[in-house]
Image (cartoon, rainbow, N blue to C red):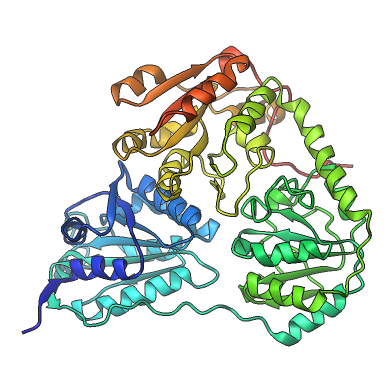
Length: 548
């Protein structure tokens, strides 16, 4: 007689076979068979977040840092709806994520009888915020649906995939499957003919530049080969750390700095790899990139978007760049001055930014001095990140940076938790604003409960700083709806046993950071911007091309 298990346990067993060791979510009546199996089997660590949005943010960051599948489990109806914004973020970032959600019992489903926890057309909502969305209609189809969902999440271009499983299906007993292997994830192989053509076009280049996006995070060895042949590198925010940002061939993520754009004008070829050339990183698509412009992307649908390309190669970035390096070895004659010009452009970009950081330049210096080389750098959307967090503080690895790419605030704290649990003992530092923090403030308790090794750097200006600046720049200084009643963070932290350090002078930054970094578990460093003062240069939104 075969052993019987519930579909809930089937879910747990399959995820284990997929290599999943950590999942995030909120327990509810509509996912208890799955979470009961997690607990009984004790192979997947389940992190109970305080909200579904936070759970998906955590799973998103966990996947970005670990390079593996992120998993979030939510309830149905309003609980599932709470996850929608975080799913949009994961979709924007191309994060491989499996979102498991419940659903009401099949006999009542889609009848609009106002059954408790029912959401009208929940599956359509999930399709709108996911790469794919599936419903498990029966116990017999559960395993096949899960396999396809995981395959879709991981196959390039990766993204979040939702699966809703009605509660009566989760509870159904089935024979334990003999085979639980996930489906293979194929690599998108570039055409050898296309690579031959691209290599032939690049052979005459004297000043070739790579623009690397998040789709090239796994292509570091191939990138280093091309750097050895004379290529320079600039990265998108998602591509940071593919080349360590202190590498002399790297312009870092200073994509729109005037001195870097001047360098572009001297380049005779650019290869954009795994990047969508997003609007806020190209001056709303007016940035003058080198010509000819070539692109490599695993997503064939990217061809022709935002910038026209002289050649487009469909394929996995690591395979394509390695093939390109094979074809170009011994054939390039790069201008010996190019490497010097790259270094000078990077130094000029940093020098131009620095005066506007005052008085917080000392805080940035203290961070770079005190942080270990392999730290994880998580950033919410806040003035400090937009001015220096996204580019000035240097990171060293392709999975060392996590940023709310879609531009929504409030994701930094939960992302820091997910990143820390994936960091394998490395220190995680998160840069957040006081306004954004309050959107997911309950997740501070999650950080304490899970002993997440985080330094949470809270830039507290008691409001929405960037909106204030925009109101100054565009609305005659009229301030509306930006001043927030902000918690006493010291007392808040004390109430949940979270260590707290208040920084009211940049002169104390290095000592405060050293103290915070020396302690295990979560620590909040509250930077009192009302005491320290405003930035010398006001940030009022993403950079745009100055009008003639």
